[in-house]
Length: 49
Image (cartoon, rainbow, N blue to C red; front, side, top):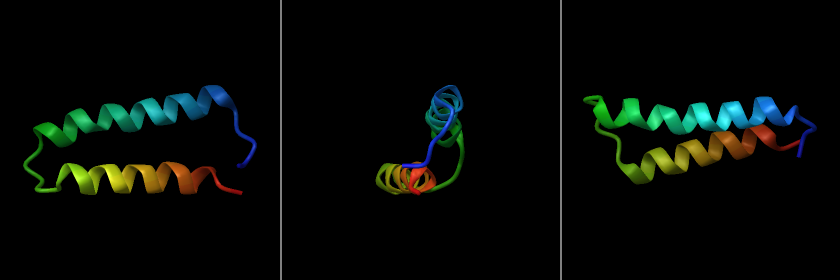
């Protein structure tokens, strides 16, 4: 994993989770599975060295 500032990493993850509220209220037709897979991929890939 890349060296990161823990505070920034936590804020980024929490912001992503908060984004689920907006997805839930939107008219977008993405499944829960699609949202989960995309979020995990982006968060984990973004931390890899």
